[in-house]
View (cartoon, rainbow, N blue to C red):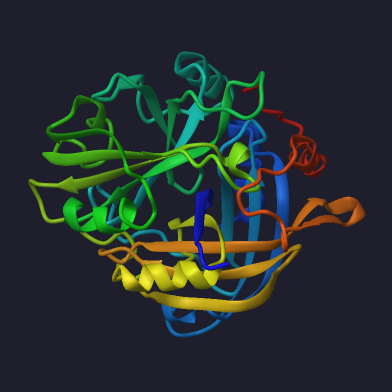
Length: 357
């Protein structure tokens, strides 16, 4: 097989200081209560982004079965995770915030408040009329809860991740990766100026160019679960942006990477390299990731933001009985049966404070 498949967003890495605490927060506040894996090992291949040394870590992949992408909640275990030395401002380069989908933003806002979370903003409206609001997790990572019309499950009001906001220095240069390679070729809008919906955010009163790109992947094993997603690229015009992870390690507090589910890693590497985006980290042989198994690698966008690609070859479905699915030999275009995906619900973790979202 020579064709590459870059499916939806599999997960976004969230650097935290206490993985157990943050998993409980995302489970009870945002409904991401399915623990796909809980992995303790030494991160060796990412040493170039961690001061040149391997470090012990814990990583939890949490999913919301309403659909959307997951959270890879990531914590150093042999050093104290570092927060940004200076407050992150909108437009700084890197992943500024994640987007979490809701059916009804007003109901989600009321429910979040009832759960004891103080929002960063009241309801705001984007240039295309989308309603949303912002909250922070206990580590200060910013989450935008926005109305969205692409769902997998039914009933609950809040789903999983449906994208993120990324600061870039040059949108035109960034489009070569995000549109040309990753396939986000539907432009929702492209606007410039000051924006009222940005004003509640740190640095949000500057002048920006912002472009929202969307992708709907209709093929692939988990295409129905991950669904469509949006990337919002933000270029600040009225000040010079800083790098979100300047003088810090990958894995420190913040959104550490954007990860895509793929098939045929060799073709992905080839096509990305041909487009001018070579991999800086590549584990091309099968590699155990706790309860999962696969191939993976990273490249950088034009501003150094890390983009991960994972070709999952073994995926845990029901951890308690050791039931996994082997993706080898499967038709790369065919979605998994709905009952197989629903089996992941057996990995749901219940807390005393259950999210009613």
